[in-house]
Length: 451
Image 1 (cartoon, rainbow, N blue to C red):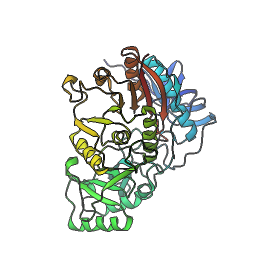
Image 2: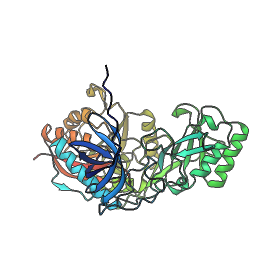
Image 3: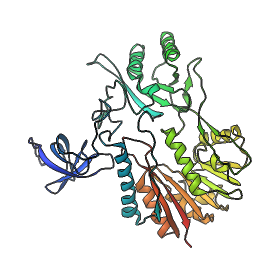
Image 4: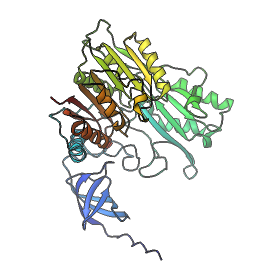
């Protein structure tokens, strides 16, 4: 016979918030049990009402802030707390950056049993209007009598009812109601569940996921909207290979990477071309700062051989190639490899080779780069990290390695192996605030062979 779950307490309780969870919720302990409380900040005392109880932890919601953190600010967005696009708008942006640096230090120490010889100053940029890549939900809500376009509600599959998004680039963030009205006017409004945003330095591309083809009248409405707004509209009836522009809507997406003080004879900024479904960083300002910092830490000289694993479109590979003697970029996605080669040709770079190889496959000895000798290396893996490539990477003889991470736990795990297993030293590390107002933490670390 199953045990009946105890009813939730109805009376609010006082909770002292000690820290933030990985997703930006306040963490308190009540009667010795962890409670996750969205909207609460470390150091605060709040009045909290329970919303869910589980065996390992409980969840609650703030009803009143009894003692506010000095870092607490008024959220800019009226939808904060409902929309799941942001978790930390109630925290001063500078305090967010400081917190992320603390999280990185604690994670490296706890999981990796390592600490850098020096801490890099955290990288941060503008806190608003920075998102140039996003996936927006689309849903017609009968009770509201209209279509909604926006991020999902926090902890829900429902689409948030947004009048404006302050973290999306204004070209899109200020037009969500107009975009929703456009979709609502289409014959396929019930068959259009998602819109992908892709933008470089130019106008945005909106990729409309369509489960049925639009009518001729729909196409006319879409093209008129594009003409009025300067947005470019594409349709995606199937997989990503089906993405195609509406007639007259084709545009080449690209972003610029400044290249000052080059050591090679070639000069000029880099122009990185990409397609709407390609992976690019959501925050172009921060991407430029990140590439610049990585170049400084790697410090490639004109005679250096450099290996760039998980290279994608060549975001790091091509700037490195402007300074190094020879560069090999390796990526598992054949389409990205093809576009990386196109980017090299587009920018007149001929000292780089791009290879397509599954960097998680076993055995790695079959990889084209395996067995070659390199002086320097750069890694920019997905959340799962780079554990599988560390041993063969060390066998190439690299003396310095820059690791760009989008998940501190796997960086810490890999740092533990690099330092305690492969004889590298963690020379420097620092946080990067690629996603302001979220708990998402990117970071960069540089390792050198122990001497």
